Image (tube, rainbow, N blue to C red; front, top):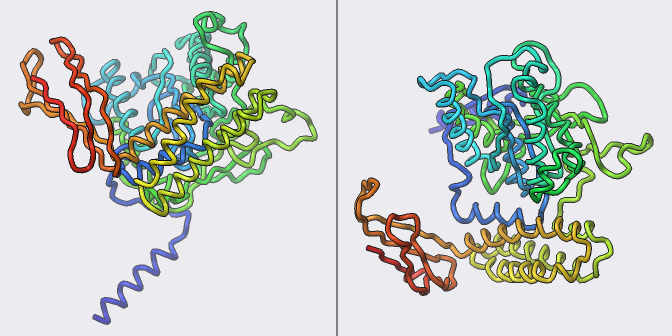
Length: 463
């Protein structure tokens, strides 16, 4: 017994004194954050309720993205996070099967979506077609269609309205100039999206100009060693106690989904890890003045992303707007405190209160904010906030909807009986108004409403 204890102490001492810059990896056991248990999922959802900020990352191909940073921004900071890949990677190789070209594009798209089940990002693409290695940015512009791809990025910026845009690498020689090309096109789109004279057909179809506040590009894949006021080091080794992993670990798990590209199937050991980002362009008021320090203490430095800050779009709006935003943010923090101290069921009351207040505010926004452009910007973000509150209420209610067929293998055209069960484990009754099954060859079937709770689920049986 004494010998065993001594050995254990020696092993632990070795682990605790290993140098922090060792590239240590372990066996990968993937647990998608999108499938996290109810308590974890609710905790992550509650983080989003006080934030309305958005970050867009752009890359050339699937597997170029920094999954660790995406996870940090989404789950740690509670921001909306999107990835805009120029291509689907159809010009690459395939290490696990025979699929190439269009078939490879399908495979790599699915791998990318699998990665986002772990890092939490939304996915978008431009129309660029991958064509293997390129040794020239100009060649890439010519074959992709420079103006068309800038237009695609502009469209995405106007649709999503990100506060911060992050590109991939800017310079460098050799093959793979798609990476640099995608970053240069993103830099142009960063400013073009705010100009209604650029791609006016998008404006005619209902999109509105939008100017993101900061544009970064990737300045290195390790901790930056040079010193520059524009260079930012982002630590991705932070540990999230709710998820139980570091951002680097989540990033390696997400990245491992790119199997056809031979990405390693091992998990990053949880040491501190950093990535460098260069602040290429800033569109913050006063930031271009020579005697003003660059807002570069963090990716969001100088950018207001809190819910209560939405009032900046309408500085002349009545004080009632700010008071209401403060009230919603307050109940969101009450829900966070309730989860930490009393459990998921205790979050329902503040969440339902916040959701009701949000819906009332959106209904009254036209009278509170006269300026139509300001009202659009506020409501655009409030609509996302409302969806976030709805998702938090669903999680706090322990709501589950399951559909069961009477046959384990169903083929198109086969008659099937479907049983739907709605269970609510959050401690309160959930009232189902109606349930409709659509998408079948027969007309849509609707069941009447009912009540679901932790004892008795709501049932809908369709033959």
